[in-house]
Amino acid sequence: MLATLLEFMPLVMFAAVCGVLMLGYPVALSLAGTALIFAGIGYALIQMGVPVPFETRYLGAMPNRLYGIMTNQTLLAVPLFVLMGVLLEKSRIAETLLDAMSLAFGALRGGLGIAVVLVGMLLAASTGIVGATVVTMGLLSLPTMLKRGYAPSLATGSICATGTLGQIIPPSIALVLLGDVLNNAYQQAQLSMGVWSPRTLSVGDLFIGALVPGLLLVGAYILYLVITAWVKPEAAPPANRDSLMKELGHTGSLWPLLLKGLVPPVLLIVAVLGSILGGFATPTEASAVGAFGAFLLALVNRRLNLPVLREVVQSTAQVTSMVFLILIGAALFSLVFRAFGGEELVTELFEALPGGVVGATLVVMVVIFLLGFILDFIEITFVVVPIVGPVLLAMGVDPIWLGIMIAVNLQTSFLTPPFGFALFYLRGVTPASVPTSAIYRGVIPFIAMQLCMLLALALMPGLATWLPSIM
Image 1: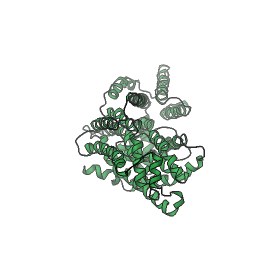
Image 2 (image 1 turned 90 degrees about the vertical axis):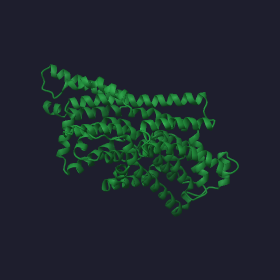
Image 3 (image 1 turned 45 degrees about the horizontal axis):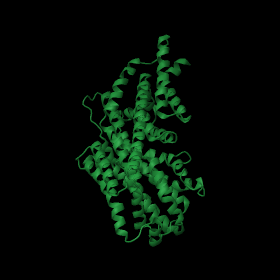
Image 4 (image 1 turned 180 degrees about the vertical axis):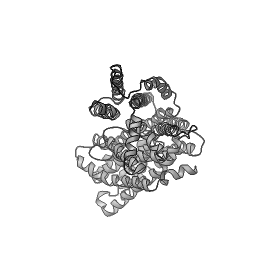
């Protein structure tokens, strides 16, 4: 009994950290604390003469891991992209953008929904954080959509689905973190196969690979809204442009508002992505361009003052500190997991699965989908991907395709009732008159679209790998 338990100690450790997280303890402390407790158990058993498969030499690598995290140039993009998104939100540039798009499309059937999708796409690309996008869009657009007669399920469903685009639309923080972790896993997999000059995977590769799937999802959302508006006109009625302008507090011509609200954020996103796609800048350098551009936009729009700047800096510092603290905890967890032979155990389990690499990939996708109910993308990226990534990549899985599949998978998980994070975020800012069941009904069509995207990626990997191969 004891021998069997010790053999599967890595799985026990993984189950333990999931249980601690479900109890509500902070993620970073849960990861580090669980790792230290199991490391202590392993060391104590060795001192007692119990034949436990625990190699203490892995713990000696922790200082180098910490130094590597703090000096990682790729991760420098995280605070800069966060700063860019928070600046656009706190300086009310996102609000102006939504007003402009609502006035541009509001007179059409389903026009407000289309405006929400397009603005949410740009906001998701700016922040890359699901909670921030869903809450912002919920506060800004949901009251207007409900007042204009939109079905509560359609309004809430479109906002939730649009908010999760932050997982896949570049330049996404999720893709930055996922790219760095997958790059380490890719090199580890190649070294395990005897490739001593391993190829690398850049965050820019994931950005380029995510473009086609991300834009296809946006197009599918818009097509669904258009079809719904024509089949059920009462669910997405057109709005009177004059009354909408009066309600939003704008007077005069529409074009100045469009130019002011739409052009600067679009140019900012184009500058960030264009510098990466054109090979002029790395994602880290492009994040600096984005942060500086957002700062200039806030100044030009006269929306930046000392209180706003203080709030922006504090929010950026909090999010960045959270990310790096989780990364440190995950690094310790990963080392202890490997010290117990977890890497070899996962390899053996995957090789024993029927279906080979297809069966292993399917199991990983199902596990990640279920974990998305209880863990955020940061924890899954830092904890799960380092465990399963090297094994799958050593089995021949394309790293870009794997990264995009994980991103779309998590996007779907965050949207699925009853535990999807996006649902909880929107519920917190939704009026009590809108029942939770309406939110659940509203997201079902969008979940179906995302599952279709996952299936399309599985059957046609070129959707993710073709564009990076020709850039």
